[in-house]
Length: 311
Image (cartoon, rainbow, N blue to C red; front, top):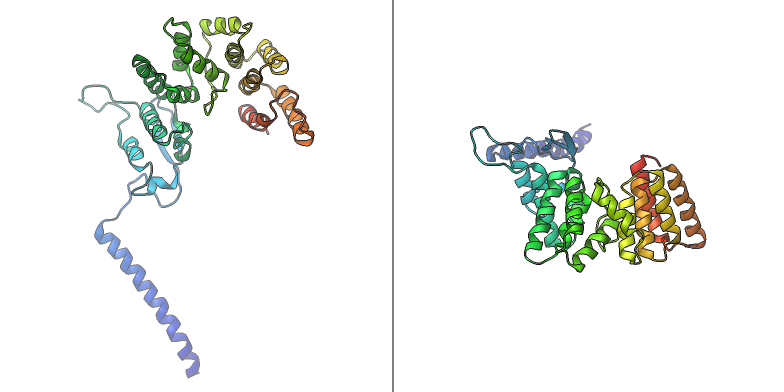
């Protein structure tokens, strides 16, 4: 009996010591005043906020959000602390949250040398709105005034999309001052084949862009047809889908066929989705790649499935 008691006491003492240590840490933290801000937590929880359009969205930020240092902490803190409306009694405009998001993404992409960097890591790409696009458009036009083409700003504006992008593209396509270099950048961007660029998923077509779409479709220059078929993807009609399919199957230039494939992801129906799946199976099984788009098929199928909300 006494031997049994001797075995138990050390374990009991260890547990008691551990409890005292934990209690000590808790008291120490309380004494130091170490607390989290209301929107922070030790777990990966979602943070809710009001967008400039007063539509509540939910975002999940990466673990780096809860770090006191490290990549991205400072700009995220700046966004969190920035007002989204003008304080009572103050004068002058207050930047919208969408514009602040654009500023953070642009500056981080500049540092990384990659338009895809940073934003997708911390979830900010989900928070883009037309104010964000306007910020990228402003960066692009500011560079033009200095005689430069800001390809990064164009890529980010394409991803953010919306009417500001339509207005920018319309103005640059019509302007007599637009250089050949800039025209090439814009047309490749419209077709979704700009190297390391984004594909436009949301861009309303105005009458000028519809006219460009028709005119460029008969051009002997492949880059013009790239832009035309890219614009067709933003008209969800049977006619536009038929013309896109014709370009995908018959155009002699691989960039035009690739642009046609991505245009389908913006306007395709379950019929086009099924067709792409058939082509993808053929490509995987026999490397049959009649149209030269086999390597792009899997990504295009995923994009179209997401838009149609099907599997």
